[in-house]
View 1 (cartoon, rainbow, N blue to C red):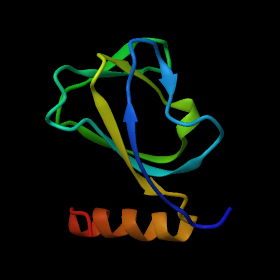
View 2: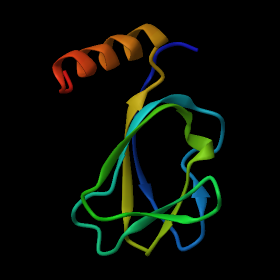
View 3: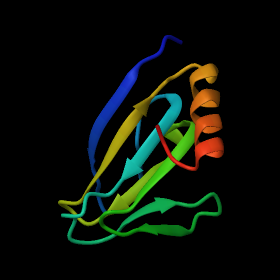
View 4: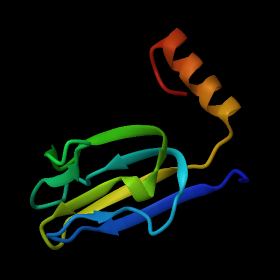
Length: 104
């Protein structure tokens, strides 16, 4: 798979839905904008609700977006920024973070 930049705005619904309709493996920052009126929930691997409060952000490394399922109140959104980078870029980024304690 070539390297592709992925930038998406995903409107959540009250029912769990995957963030992609097909396998899309990459490294992504998934965040809930601070203007969301309520938390958004990611479905945990055990089926539990994992709450993301407005303004929260997490990085997912080498995961497929079709495996990440979210739900929330109408009008709330999730932003997805990342890409399908090669492993070399991921390793360089993580090494930099480990050595310097911050993102590039």
